[in-house]
Image (cartoon, rainbow, N blue to C red; front, side):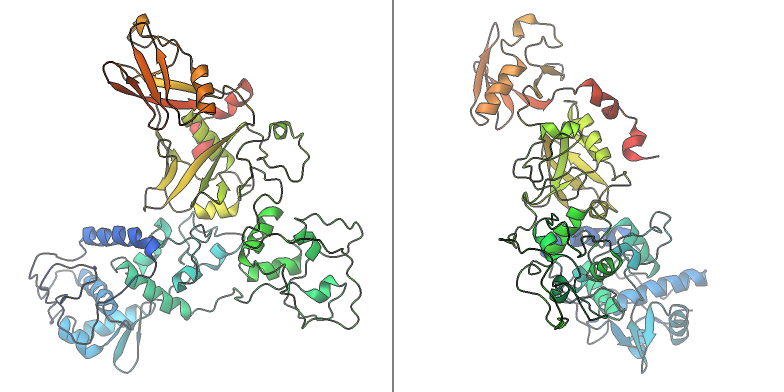
Length: 561
């Protein structure tokens, strides 16, 4: 069926180059630049994946003029080639004549276009690559996409602002990864899985520009008339919420206030979701997200269009000071472990919170029902709380000195913050206790990992050294070689006390034969006579019996069935 030839002077590839790519056509440019340097690793991984796919014969000077025995396979090969061919043009379109001259005869070309209207368009004897890709509206909503698990969703799960180049938030809950498992399946149905990543972004930008977005791009503005007691504009699009309640960290002191204090009020919820704010979170997380997205909301940016001449005095008092716009969510309220945002002035767990005895509204420590907690961060400044099943799994593994890496399970609890679910969705994550990071196995994305402990809690860690049988032995105990004269004359408790007081200062100790130096920076033990070194570890002391039942839960609790 194929009368034309695909002349190829070198193997099929997708990497940008200023050299001739082997195709004999004019007007095509292969210069594409990726403006998002943060995803250069994803681009590299994707290019390698494309090279490994070997969708076409990659032998030098390969000729494709030999007719296949299977017409369907022939058309499939032609379809993949046509998508790739059109992607080489800056505007992703080419005349039919140019296409016919390079590979496909007219009848086959017309059949491909007719059978794939969701991928191609035609205009004036020109073929345009216009895949009808959309971003899943449910994925962007507070409900989330329920069809993802069953693999029935055919739309992309990604941040639309990222595709357009306007979102630079590395922790964006809508996601900035094109190559998730779900998105890869969607791209494959459009035969876009062999396209260079930087080109793919441009194609998506054009495709998504043709789809109407339900998200309002205007800034969120506090309705001044509403806060004065009445808004006469039935079509008011501004924020109908008690301004003082928001400024005072959701603690309006006016008991007689008649203004809205509920983010899930029908009008308020609709306004927030039209602005891209997820209302399926805790009130504090919603407040934080509002102040992050619209830092000028509590400033002078109030509406005047909806003011009413009959407006009366505000039923709420005016606070003396606004939260700082650049840090609208650090230390402003007591932080619960069940919330998404986990910034706390003092990185430790409140003792009184274990039994729900701390009633402070501005406790500087984390409130948790466990004596330990785990958080992640993309920059070391903004910390996010992991879900309870993740926390218990990490703690169980971290208490074992033999484990340095472990799989991070998906957030399992129904009450897990949706932002956390989206942040870690579609990727397999691994926790590294040596580097204290969580890294994606699908890309090079990683997060800083840290653990939190109870305040003023002594003897919460145990120190180990690696003996001659490659076994981790607690200091002060005889190692597995059973040579008692090598037993250290210091205990793990003494090492911990020294470490707490001087974490960067070496510590010396002895046994019956040798002297040693503990280096807390490099975590090594060095024999001062022989200069031989051994690695050391600091891991949590096994927990009290009340928490052992949770930590010893079966794997199904952490990872699901």
